[in-house]
Length: 333
Ligand code: DAH
Image 1 (cartoon, helix red, strand yellow):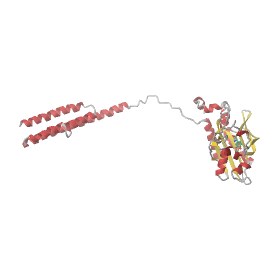
Image 2: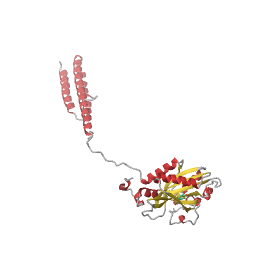
Image 3: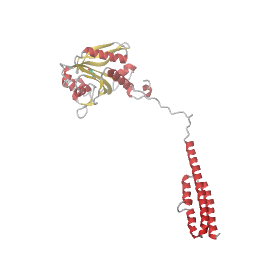
Image 4: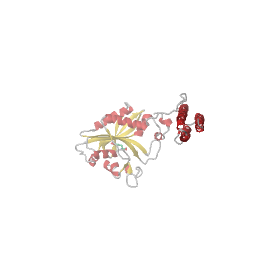
């Protein structure tokens, strides 16, 4: 045995002891990888020792080569074992940190519900759709033409007053009723017509217990050959019965520019007559303004305030409760 041989053998054994010790102490996967590179990498310590094997006599190389292989395998085994141990520990730690305590109280999320105004709109639309009506909509900003003129409303009509209508600087306005949708729908479609149009409307009212500057209406329009006031009464009666139950109703003569004859509908509620909607036979001038032939077609229209229905139905004393988003109030519906 030459000195060179015993020296290399000693180095290899020292490398093994040193390496196994360091690997077994490694506490992260990253550090373990650094050790692998340092011991077994291309430019690592084992390669460095083997690099000096060249100087050995040929007959001694196989023995040193065999020892080098054993050292390499031993270090590789240590690395593999330590990697497995660290990975297992990592998963274990993760599992422990993510453990669910199923006995903890849950987070209470109150159930949402339909707003009373939407509730009435939904019910009304359902009833009319059930009678064959289609739902229509129109813009909330309207021109004088759609809001008044085409609806046969004369220039001096009080509704056109600056005191009652929100006029915009460009001469348009916020619609004061959903009746404007009648005109838009008839302009776009040929008769026969059966439409129901819900929407927001605007009036320059001072807000109090029974008034709001923004509120909701539902508009009804039916145009066909041979429709009469009887059809109007029957439709309204069925609708009001569905909503309020079998209460007495009466039709009282009234006036609207866009209907002739016109009527208001009263409902007997807790012994009092309450006015709940306006209606009438569509004025021939309105039919003419949309190009329908009034000699051939007749029809009826009606409109009512959703807030009014809500207040009667739920016995509310103040319209403002509907807009206050107070859960103590809204949770009752
Ligand atoms: N547009 C009316 C209002 O806002 C309500 C109304 C009355 C609508 C009679 C109609 C109708 O369609 O025929 O007070």
